[in-house]
Amino acid sequence: MSERLSIPPNEIELVAVRAQGAGGQNVNKVSSAIHLRFDIRASSLPEVIKMRLLALNDRRITHEGVVILKSQEYRTQEQNRTAALARLDALIESVSVTRKARVATRPTRASKLRRLDGKARRGEVKTGRQRVTE
Image (tube, rainbow, N blue to C red):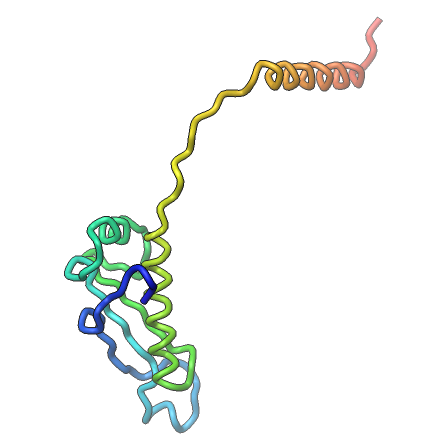
C-alpha cells in the first residue's frame, strides 16, 4: 500500500473470476478478472481512516462496510490484481489526506467600498440604457 499505511495481505481477499465481454475462444477457459474484497471494520487501519471510509458515499462500499472492486481491464490476472490493489490504495489515500481548516476572514472596509462603487457604476450604466421619458 502506501508509505504511511500498510495493509497486511491476509486482510485482502482476491478471487479470480471470468471477465465479461467479448474475448474469443480464450474467454471461456481463463479467469483473468479479479474481485477484491476488503472489510473496513475488521481491518488494521487507524480508526480515523475507517470512519472516513465508512462515511464515504461510494457504491463500491457495501452497507456492511466491505469494499468490493472488480478489475478486468487487462488480459492477465497479475495485471488485474495489481490494478485492483492500486485502486484500493487510491481509495484509502483519498480519505487519509486531512484538509487544512479554513480560517474565517472578513472583507476590509476598502474592499466593501470598492464593491459598492462598482455596483453603483453598473446601476448608472443600466439606467442610461432605459427608454427616455419626457
